[in-house]
Length: 73
Image (cartoon, rainbow, N blue to C red; front, side, top):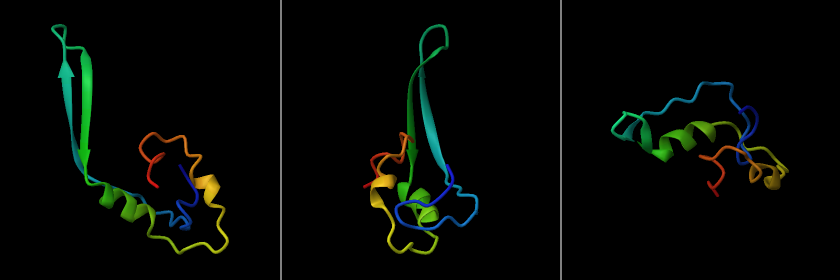
């Protein structure tokens, strides 16, 4: 996703964060469950590094289709 995030201008920088995923599998080794563990502050800190945008339309930020960022406030 490109563009502003929660009223902060994009920086064009790559945002990296580290975590771990645990996969549950069935007898045929098919994935049945996935759990992701990471520090959300590490992700959001990188996204909010850009300068604050004056007169930003906050409603546009809440329409994100990204399942991770959809409920970030």
